Length: 120
Length: 114
Image (cartoon, each protein chain N blue to C red):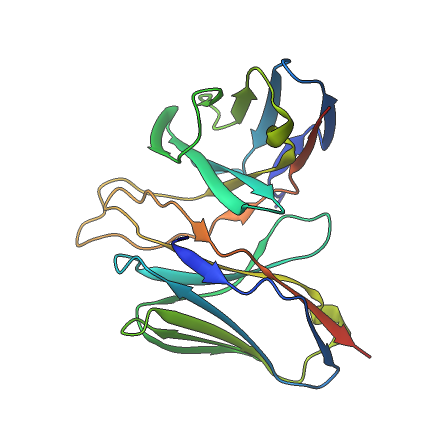
C-alpha cells in the first residue's frame, strides 16, 4: 500500500512570493491534516480537511490556506511568504468516520516525508 | 506556556541502556497520548498510543500515562543504535465526528552510542 506522498520535496522561494504544496493521502483515507515543523516551534497543526471541508484549524494567519479535492488529495497555499515561513511542511492522512455511535476513537495519522520550504 | 512540554535534549546513552523520555501537558481534555519517532529527513511515524491513564507495552517500548499528574513517559529497553532518532510526544482529543488535532511536544533528539 502506497504511503502519503508530498510534492515537491524541496522548494526555494523569495519573500513576497506564494507557494502551493500538494499531498496525496493513502488510498481510502478521507482526512488530511497539515503541520508545520520548525526548530523553534516544533510541530504545529495548521488545518484538517475531510470531504473537501475544513473542519479544524490551528492558530496560523490567513496567509495559510488549503483545500481538498473530491479524490481526497489536498493542497496548501501560503501567500506573501515571509522568512519565518521556512519550515518542513508535513501532511498526514487518516481514516475517519462520521457520527460514530457511542463516541469516537483515535485513528492513526500517517505522515508523509514533508516538503522543505526555504524562503530567502 | 506551551500546552505540551518536552525536554528537547539532546540525550546520548550507550547501547543497551534504558531510555526514559517524558512530557508534561496542561490541557486536561486530552484523551489520546501518542509517541512518534522521526528519523532525519523523514516524516514522524507512530510508535504507540494510549487512551487515558495506564501502561502499554510493545516489545522494547513501554508507554505510561498519568492523567492525574498530566505526565506521560516512554521507556525504551535494551536500546539499539537504530533507535537513534527524534522522539515526539503528541496528544489529542477526538470529536464524535472523528476530528482530531495533534498537539506535539518539542521532540527529544536521542542518540544511542554503540
